Length: 144
Image (tube, rainbow, N blue to C red; front, side, top):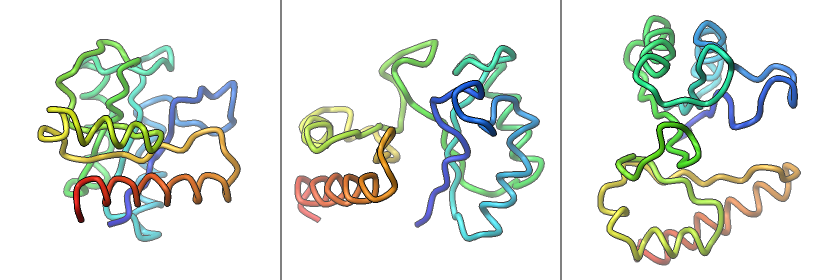
């Protein structure tokens, strides 16, 4: 399965082209699916461009993507830093081997729909190497 992340935790003033509005998301979603993505992941934003999981902000972005791609599996960032925070999320972000170990040992692992290997702030080669290590650690920890 190939999942494409349409944006991330960075803001447009940090990285040009970061998607910050619901209207920004539909065209890139179509492009990555046409390129082979089978699922999408998005960091939702409010009207000020700040990450948000408030119902209204989720609804606007999900509706924009659903108009373009009604059947694509779609996940939203579960980051605990995104308001309103909480532990009821069904995706889990794993940033390191230690995170993978913590997730496997926790009750949360039974509630997770997806485990997201997060590799921010790295060069492409470092990100790919780190992702491979995390993936391997997760598979070893759960005996797959």
